Length: 399
Image 1 (tube, rainbow, N blue to C red):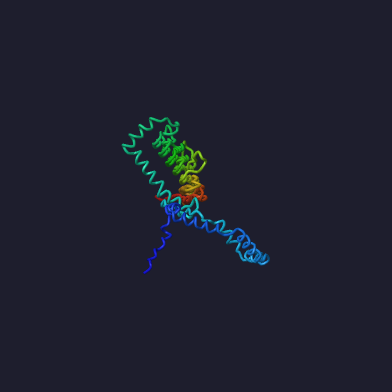
Image 2: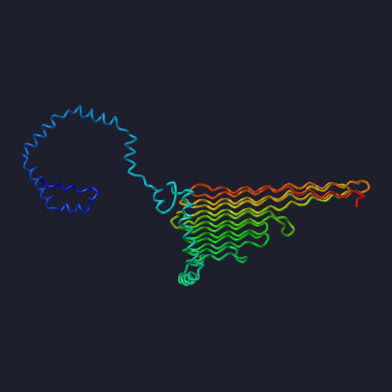
């Protein structure tokens, strides 16, 4: 019975360690030496003669023809594709490793939403929970006192202070982390709302404050320079009467954009939405009939609603622009004037005046831009309702 042959090693088991061991295997070295000895045993003259004999049997014409035939049957497109496509980079697969979804482009709505849900919002929530916790406040107070930062920031890690009547603009967030403070919401007629504060490296911009009667809303603050979202613009104040005069409705504030960092590369995040325009003031009441039986005057046209604020610009890499603010509703038309009472000469009382036409709605704000494109503009404000008819005048002789 002959010796049992050993199975060759599987190729899958061959690795770099096998290669190194083979280099120092005495059997391999001996086989190489034996092969070299066998090659040396061949006479040089015989080798040259054999080479000349082989060359003399080659037909040059047939070799050229064969080469031309092979070239004519080649597919240029497939050849170029094979040479130029050694393997495309699978961005979608890479994003999937981080729990993100996308269509393989640097910016898409799905990718921006996934980034917010899976990356930024968890980070932002952790930062805010830390800032507002007793331990975080204790540590951050000591940490912020140890470093001198530019005056516009509240410290290294902190949220900006909200605006006040004395200082309407919200304070900027921490240099490293923290949100900008909200702008002051105006309680004074004809006084605009304060702008929101800007974030530092990571955080959201502060919301703009709402405007007072007849005043514009404040702009939202800028998001963080690494990642963060722009603040929402403040709503415009409604139209009304200030110092005896009618004032137009205020416009909404613009949404804050994402931050720009020192590399001039857009931060990651979304632009803030624009603020809504204020509602237009009601039209004036029609005049009462002045002579017996005269009809009342038509009510005045309602005043226009304020325009919505523009949406902030989003990231050119991962994010989208803010939606423009909605235009304000136009003011209701004024009530028609009351008809005059009748008298002996004109017994019938006058008809009440027609109600005034509603005011036009404000224009919607333009959407912000990003790597995805321009976001949706805000909806135009609705036209105000027609005013009510005035009361008819009383007939002569009636109780």
